[in-house]
Length: 168
Ligand code: HEC
Ligand code: HEC
Image 1 (cartoon, protein in one colour):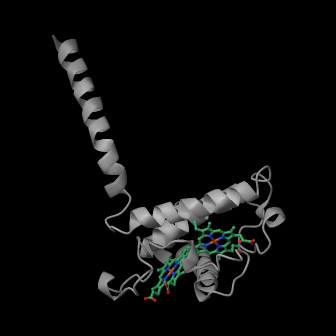
Image 2 (spheres, rainbow, N blue to C red):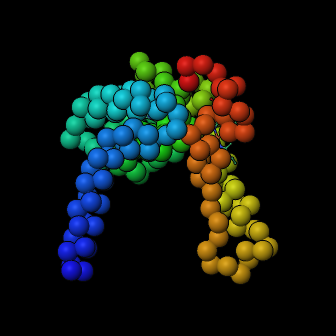
């Protein structure tokens, strides 16, 4: 009897999971309705770049790409993963927010420079500010922050959604 109930439970759970999956993947990404088209755009660019670097995915990024300063030593494919799944998503943007799409290595866009500065800022907050907090002096595990601590899907944290410039 118990077994029967359990397996029924299992079946219902799987069935409802399957039923939920399509709608979930679209809504779970973000509450922002633009997220789907952003995700498609990012995937398109990553696919094209992956095709261009095929066979070199595991090499250090600086040997594969032209203008790597932050991610030296990281596999090229890992950098693409950070671009697609971390930075772009965390800011709620696609690649063109920071890149000239005709020249990925270019850092002419201001947001490219800001992103680099933010990496330095996050490093300082974690390694200098948080590391020196007296209240955590005796703790082994100290808090750490990352891009998503502030951005949470927004390019402009702290500003209401409505004031975000259109098309971003
Ligand atoms: C928030 C800004 C930002 C976003 C969004 C972003 N990038 Fe980047 N990207 C950078 C920065 C900064 C670097 C330089 C990294 C370094 O110095 O190691 C970079 C480096 C790269 C490089 C290496 C270029 C070279 O030749 O040196 C590629 C390729 C790249 N990004 C692809 C993408 C793709 C594809 C997307 C979208 C899925 C994307 N980026 C989204 C900021 C961004
Ligand atoms: C301590 C909070 C905080 C953290 C952590 C943080 N940012 Fe920011 N970031 C901000 C604020 C505030 C702005 C200014 C937003 C505005 O213009 O209204 C900003 C702006 C930006 C912009 C410019 C956006 C635009 O469209 O003008 C980029 C790009 C950016 N951040 C990337 C990053 C990246 C990448 C990381 C992680 C390495 C990061 N940020 C971590 C607070 C933060």
